Length: 159
Ligand code: HEC
Image 1: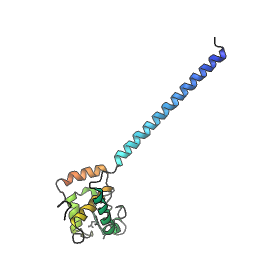
Image 2: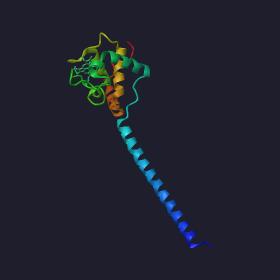
Image 3: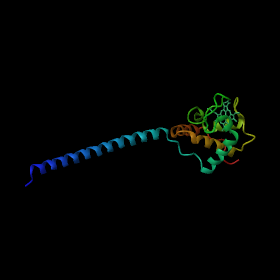
Image 4: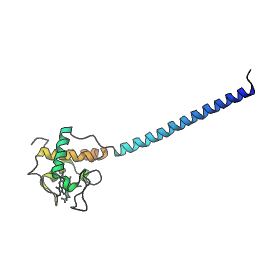
């Protein structure tokens, strides 16, 4: 037979157990909310899979460092204040141009944008475009690749 004290102790133990269960439920909820919002942020801003092999991206990075970085910045952030060179990353308009149009611009130049057709091979021009595309979001890549179907690279990677 249990005494009053024993029963009180049992009740307290049960209450503590409930308290613990409630606390861990709180944690599960908090972690779920955190994961859900982290997933949302990740899918919104996740970078796309590169559109080319690692070798091509590496070549593009080298071409970029030697020919483009001085105007367009280390990571394509642009130098709007200095030479009016736009950002090439996800923040401005570069991703609105289909592949073929980018190739055309790089080959023949723009108003202030120099022409690289004499200095760079088609392979290098395609590689540097594939490289700058690694700065775009998955959504931008998807829409740009859709547009590129009717305006693709003039030639594939060989020169
Ligand atoms: C002398 C500075 C300069 C250099 C070097 C340069 N650019 Fe540009 N680029 C510009 C300017 C300025 C523009 C804006 C369009 C214009 O004035 O022709 C531009 C425009 C562009 C655009 C179009 C952006 C848009 O939002 O429409 C792309 C893409 C681009 N450049 C890529 C490159 C790449 C890749 C290289 C290296 C191979 C390069 N640029 C080298 C100055 C430069």
